Image 1 (cartoon, each protein chain N blue to C red):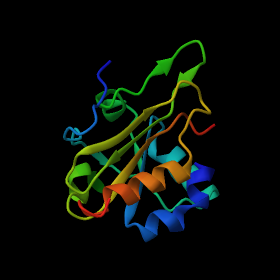
Image 2: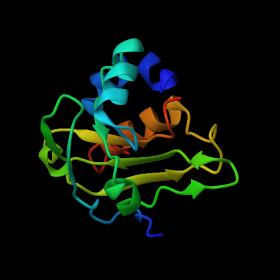
Image 3: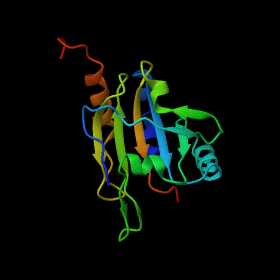
Image 4: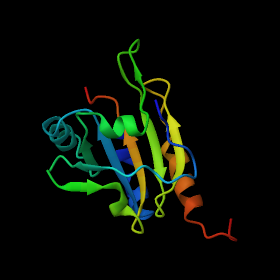
Length: 110
Length: 43
């Protein structure tokens, strides 16, 4: 999350919104977002409805939910999916930003 | 467990943000690309 915060200006430049979904309740979200000055949309999902819809894995042996990232373009289509296999397995910002650039490059200019 | 697939419509959902406002994924349609981050717990 700190990694995303660092490059938030780059996401803004691309008019992309970062939406964080997690199993914590609203109070935990508020505390974490305020403590870390996160400008993202924070969506508590205590019943894990969306987490299940998107297939976020729970790894009982590693005690927790594995990170996952999905890019949804302006047409509502899934353009990138990354399911982490460990807590640290998240894509680099540069990779995500490059994908956003590709998505927003008009056909013919690629 | 279902997983989403590339180049298919993203499953729409509605949740309240931590400020209590209703947010729908489809609200961003036509407005912005969205990076959905499914986080592990904060602690």
